[in-house]
Length: 496
Image 1 (cartoon, rainbow, N blue to C red):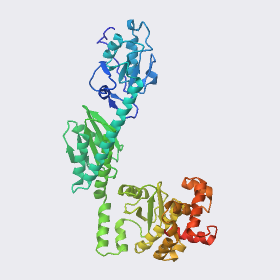
Image 2 (image 1 turned 135 degrees about the vertical axis):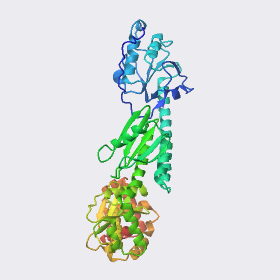
Image 3 (image 1 turned 90 degrees about the vertical axis):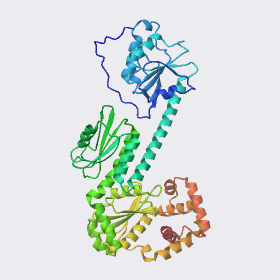
Image 4 (image 1 turned 90 degrees about the horizontal axis):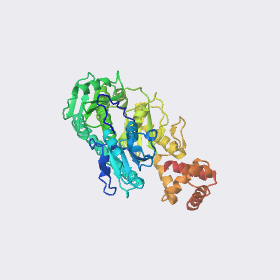
């Protein structure tokens, strides 16, 4: 094969998109002793990243590659006179153009050794060529790639999780902003800078970089008032990223790091959220107003004199919300408050309570069951809290996403709460140790005794519903066809 003419520029194709998988280095695959792979051509540095293994006996595999593959072939497609022409040169050129990162050639049963012309072509196009011995199957190579990808993905998830925990701990320190920046710089192995609304550097951590000017310019691009929410760039091998903090105050987080992986992006995004909370509280005045309101309440001020500090009208609504899944944590509660439009959120066991100005519309929230009180003034907040709790109980019993407290008093409002709860415990005691029976009875009554609809709601067979209701009838010693019995049980279940 003739040497390429150095006077003729070789066009460099744009890098093709690669599959969204966790890549593994070729060196990790070569290190697997069970495969006995050996690189016989092409560069060894930098270590190519493999996104998948693809076996193909096509003379032109270009149309079938996404980019990032280790292409595996046994040479079935190679014609007898290939060594005397440009076949191998064209074949390797097409793999490189498609974004293939390495070529694996299986020795036997078609070829006893790797063709010399193929070795020369891979050297010329700087495509790593790997010899696959006869005892190693292509499916074994593909499986090894998958195993290495799974290990890399697990390691990346561990790294991100540990980084999230360390960032959260840093945000709780007495100097939260510098602490978060230090943790971020350490986790990405670079430098983290917080810029203020005027573009000035407020705080920074990590080793200094020659790309400081470029980082500052990139931060100016994402100023919220006149640019996108985030931007990336690369300067002299250093990867830059900037994130506009979602406070509306003009703060920007910028990161310079030697690498740019999905894990690094996730870690930086978590840091941006934490810094947005830290900067937003102090700059918007909301945090100061809430602190002032709390201090006045603790010192004996009446709620109606404190409410104006919260920046809302005189009438409020209380919302009780319960997630459909696990018990809520502070992050989930804060997200619910943001969705409803209020920062006044409290996590009380498995229920989140939100205090919301009455003029804001409350819509059903995906993944939550909500009860909403009637609008009330600050003096009546305790009564509104009780209304929201009862509305949530009705929503859970009827499997409704949201129920509002009615102006007309309900039966439960006429019976003292302690008496109603004691009555419910006594009435339902025979089935209290079997949660499945309690839930089935609750659902069956709410659906007016429909076997089919109850089975669908509980994701069980209708015969299972019949058996459970029959068991409830026997344990409770009552007639569930009696409307009075159903009413009494329904009341008890709402208090239970």
